[in-house]
Image (cartoon, rainbow, N blue to C red; front, side, top):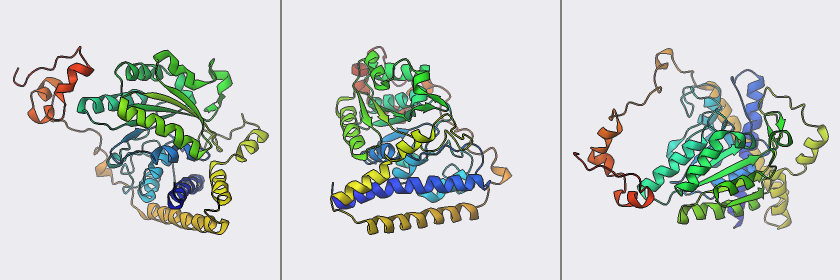
Amino acid sequence: MNRDEALTLYRQMLLIRRFEERCAQLYVEGKIGGFLHLYIGQEAVGVGAMSLLRPDDYFITSYRDHGYALARGTDPRPLLAELCGRITGISRGKGGSMHFYDVPRGNFGGDGIVGGHLPIAAGMGYGIRLRGSDQVVLCFFGDGAVNEGAFHEALNVSALWELPVVFIIENNRYGMGTSLDRASSVKDLYQRASAYGIPRRDVNGMDLMACRTVLAEAIERARKEKVPTLIEAETYRYRGHSMSDPGKYRTKEEVEGMMKLDPILAFGRRLMEQERVTQAELDALDKDVLAQVEEAARFAEESPFPSEDTLFEDVYVRSPYMNMKAAEKDPAWRATVREDRLPEIFPAWSSPKVGS
């Protein structure tokens, strides 16, 4: 990795941190409503993962979704406008914090239901297999989701059908306010993959380069071999579960100890020790990022709210097909499916011929 690439990764982590800090301020000021789940402390996982994706790859995540969108390159202005409920937001001001979507960048959004998006990730992988492409799907979720039935169902079907999905547990030690010790009989969460016979790894989620190394291996496996992987990134959130959470279930000593492992400070120190950057250059970068975030805040506050006549827009997508039989008879639809691959992948499904 050259100097410019390293500084790009550092800047992305810093952008997430400053963006989230500004969001917290706006929330306290009453300019952001609803729930707000901050990604502060976990930046190395999201940035490390996004830096390895191709433009045509996909990802999907839970409600703590701001950082991934920023790391993927989405402009912070429509993101902050979304948080403030403005029409210029990434979801036209109707999704809020938990529902960032940017399909052109492969972002299939956050999901407010714990574990609810894991089967969707499997479905995205299923679509890739049908098309016969070599794209991959990254699916991010927290340690609280591994006790949901959808977690096991998604891993089982992904293993069974050999879907190119990388499942990433961001283990920040707490499912809301419940510690992992009180919620899981198996403390090494990545070992749960052994039940489905798929590769599994754990990684220090506070170390950007370690995350990139482990994730690169899993992404390459998914792309070339169509094999899913379960990765557990051991990380930490420095704020509460959401802005309404004071975090009293954690001791001051615990939080202070983890602050010493701050992934942004650690990566900055590494770059300075390698004499690839100076403290003055990092300070200048921080100043530039702060200016970018302030510009996003101004854009959001100056943007209008959605008008009442847009209330019923963006609710449903009208499909030209009333059912799958109609779709299967359409040559345009069938052209998107590599039928020659179907018997090999799904031998139980015999695709009907057009006009049958």
